[in-house]
Amino acid sequence: MTSKIFLVGYMGCGKSTLAKRLAQRLGWCRVDTDTRIEEIEGASVNDIFRYEGEEHFRRMEREVVEQLIAREESVVVSTGGGLPTWGDNMERMNEAGLTVYIRRSAEKIASRLSPYGRQKRPKLRGLSDEELVAFMTQNMSERAPWYEQARLILDAEEASDEELVRTILNAMNG
Image 1 (cartoon, one colour):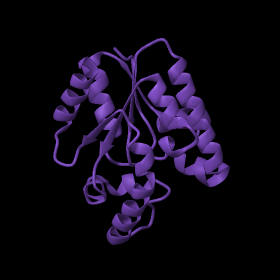
Image 2 (tube, one colour):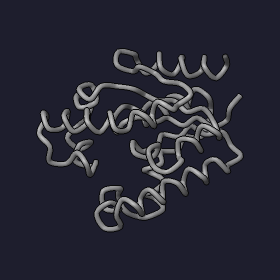
Image 3 (tube, one colour):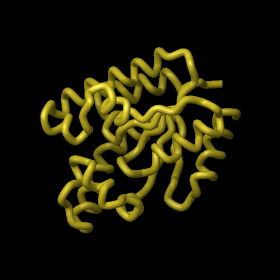
Image 4 (spheres, one colour):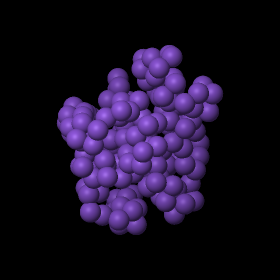
């Protein structure tokens, strides 16, 4: 059985929430790559993008992924939305564990995002509801070729978190 699970998908699709539930069920550690980078850098993702640039942030993501892969303990990882699209990150995660794509529509994600959730994501700040859905739809279609390399693709549009957890556990055991 795998000891690493990497949840991938668009920002706001529910990776962090699902990682928490899955880690609790398995008794594993849970790591959110964005949170880990914020801890290391002592700055928000927003500020890292603004002052250090996306390239720096993506290098930090890769370092965190490599550290997690090297860990002996079992871990559920919720990745940043862009992490799988950078370099060979998706390939690396596929080699190291079970990758799970949490697929939701732009409309569904937009309806789930709080005002704070929109504010803290650099690419979503200041967009109207219509602009938000249009931007996300375009951006998601650009990222889909990476996300779809995941070993398990979950259509999370109508599924509850509990159903998604059960599906992942079944995939691990099957």
